[in-house]
Length: 363
Image (cartoon, rainbow, N blue to C red; front, side):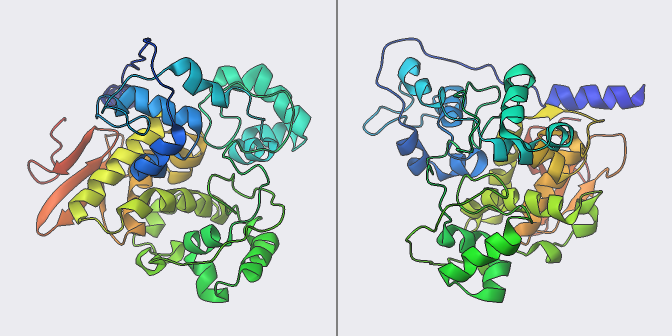
């Protein structure tokens, strides 16, 4: 009975907001402008057109963000025009197999079988058919490998790879050809991503003609040096841990130069967005209590949220305490900031100073 009460409480704390959709005629939403203007949103959700539109309609309008260049803050948009971009994007079989290991285990990697599964079951289950898609999105009927992120040629991006994987740069340098060879020989099997918005281990064709400019990668803690690594790992394999780490790294990059308080607030916001756009609460699904379940599989409890949050904190070099770890009680991250302890809790809808030692304002 206590387990059910705690689960119900966590679900109550993390209730979803009601989506507000304007119906008046207006200019179309510009996802490219929105992504370029709001890197915090991109860090949390990626660059999928449908996802960015839903963020604007659900949160951006109330936050007085701009939906297109020259717009008034919080302006209405024509959703019939803005939402059409994602309707015919091709199903990405590589992404689908990598994202849903249960489907892969049952059906293998045949693109047509994966597409058939998505059309018959995945859409109704709220699965995503390509990177950045809204759960249950419509797709074209071809069983291809397009990602829907704008990288139609799926070329390897050495600048992205170098800035995303400082461990590779530390070992091999920044030569584009060497980085590509590393991805093809090792990175693909390790679940690394070859360009922004790619699925882990995605196929590539050629290499982008770009200059590699590594910016501040030393400020991010490598996966094997994370302060709370033993607690974070739980039952994750090395491949699963690396996959979760890569997602968390993309989330925290925009917050690297901010104050400690702003970093915690940004991480809490991003963790909330990750869950609201495709997450479900569970205390029984595989990896429900670790970062892989929260960031990759999209199904987790407050324990999974706490560890995913902790992973983001550790990557920025922030140690934390996992409050109520391994207990049937609400869990969150506790962080010391200049002698004051803060709560960082996306599930509990609070990020700020604790009212008393180990006390949560909503418990």
